[in-house]
Amino acid sequence: MRLHARDPYCPFAWVIDLLNAPVVLVGPSMRIAYANPSAVALMAARDVLLEAEGNLVARCSTVTRVLKAAVGEAAVVPAGDSRTRAGIAVRCGDDSAAALYVFPLPISAQSDPSAPIAAVLLARHGASFKPPTDVAASLFGLTAAEARVFEFVARGTSAIEIGARLNIAGSTVKTHLLRLYAKTGARRQAELVQLAFSLLPPVAV
Image (cartoon, rainbow, N blue to C red):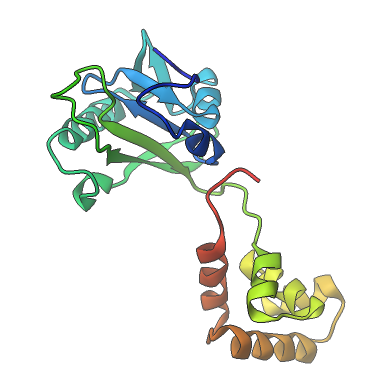
């Protein structure tokens, strides 16, 4: 078992290590081939996913069965096939919602039975979110005031709350929003939120 070590099956381990999300590479029998630091910490805390004698299991036995079935499917479905990306609903130790996703790897288990065949990724609801304000400001030529409003909008803050937090009038917030719409092509605040998420890299920052 290699929980966190450079591995011939993971030549780009350093990229996986950058991901905020826990990622575990597993073989056909759920044998752990590699886990990034986020996954190592998750398993050490025995939260959602665990390591049992070198194998990946879930804290819930029902989730373990579903996860094994998904990994088994990954062994026969071509890499990149969307059928292997259905979310498995889980609950974290703090009762927050999360989902497990299984992605097939372009490594044939037939040629090497010890090779990982799937990547298991945990997406946690409510994970820390840092809006890509600087990137958006650079891309769309936002002023400092517009960038501040963009950041609050990206965090789901209402126009009234933005005015209160920035100590500006509601009409001023509306003006900034209209300018944001004009510069970004968005038509409403929900689209600004979507824009923010589309610019956010899934890496540890």
